[in-house]
Amino acid sequence: MNIAFVTGASAGFGTAICRQLITDGYKVIGAARRQDKLSCLAAELGSNFLPIQLDITQKDAVNNVLLTLPIGFKDIDILINNAGLALGMEPAYEANYDDWDTMVHTNIIGLIHLTRIILPTMVARNTGYIINIGSTAGNYPYRGGNVYGATKAFVKQFSANLRTDLFGKKIRVTNIEPGLCGGTEFSNVRFHGDVAQAKAVYDNVDAISAQDIANTISWLVNSPAHFNVNAIEIMPTAQVPAGLAVSKNMQ
Image 1 (tube, rainbow, N blue to C red):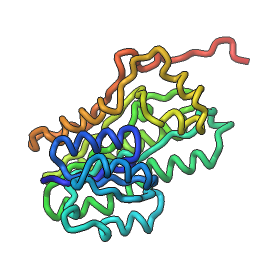
Image 2 (cartoon, helix red, strand yellow; image 1 turned 90 degrees about the horizontal axis):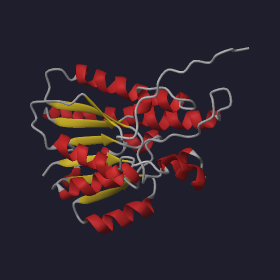
Image 3 (cartoon, rainbow, N blue to C red; image 1 turned 45 degrees about the vertical axis):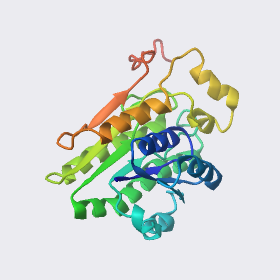
Image 4 (cartoon, rainbow, N blue to C red; image 1 turned 180 degrees about the vertical axis):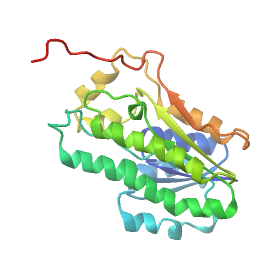
């Protein structure tokens, strides 16, 4: 039975991914900061789900993650770097620097640190799959996307470079780049708990869902090992990349 390690497991994409992989017959290690949410998920998913309280921005905790795993969960076959967040939509000259710092430490540093800890075990066994959750924000700029978009552009390039470093090894890497996705805590977090503002983002839009991303991951991990999906961009039908803007009569 293959073992998957999923970060950000306590909500949104992470919870849907854990549920789907358990249904598919995998053992799943679900890592997140909120122990209460993990405990509820563990009660639902049973003995093939191992909850791990982990803040990926805390270096010592990440360093110790493999040391704390029980024997039956040590050989991680699939790493799904899902934990991440957006904070604020102010223009760069008005943004809260602490928000920027949190996004960089979560979306970049936490992701690469955990990858660096787990990847050598995959290389030693010459098998594995790393799936990073990027974003269309890493491909297309939008107003207020500044540092969030930059962190996801990093994830895109890091994923591509991992593929190159793993040339000749039986380890796959995919960057999933979702667009507008409803039914998660993403916008609630971005707008610092402003429920009305978060809800307005999805009003009258048939957005993609966390289950859509979980279904995509299910297809990827159960696909033949001889081909690799380097990146997959997923938008709702209602969303397209914005056109170029021109400001006329600038003063």
